[in-house]
Image (cartoon, rainbow, N blue to C red; front, side):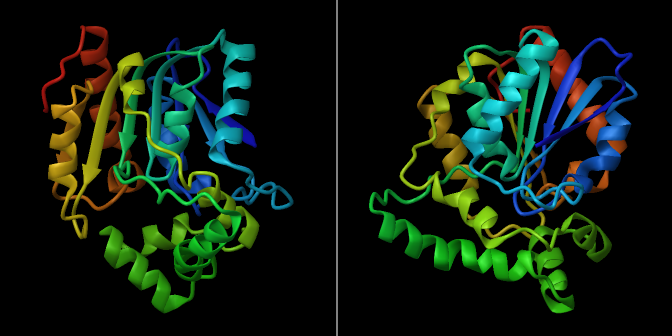
Length: 266
């Protein structure tokens, strides 16, 4: 696990968690843009870091725990803005669980609101990963030209951007471990109450027909969060393709947090 830091002269700390199956380089330009305003810590997961190809991804809990150790040791456990994109939202939720940390603003961009199936047996988990994880591994883990085009299409991204975020040298075990330890684990949405929580979604090209209903269900259960839908952007497209616009949105959300926030949608 590696941490890239930018803008150390800035007072407020922003931690960025990239998506699953890809490298940190997908959001590197955005991290550099954010460093104009914040002290940015960009996390590079084990197993998906081109700079440390010998490492292996163990679990989102392991990554979050070590990040918590780092923030506690170096920054007294205080995070002003915690941002996760796509699978990074899984790690974000584990970071929220860390009682050592104080987090003012948390932004989950493209967070899945569907839990993994409740499978208990090792055999069942292996079978699930073979088919479910294996599909994404086939598309993203060893991407050829057609697969890159397919990925660009389903995420609403430009082909060049889709190619930039892919990392083709991760092991099957690293891919499998992304999902294996989340099978049977329920998302604890009560953790939203530990911070000012924002859920962002780029829905251009999306196939998730239940997003609106799932968000409404969370509201009805009383979980505090603000939502923002970007109809002109694909999944993760704000951080991936529009650094300046991303910076404006993050700063606006953080100002609302500092002002007391609101539970209403924006």
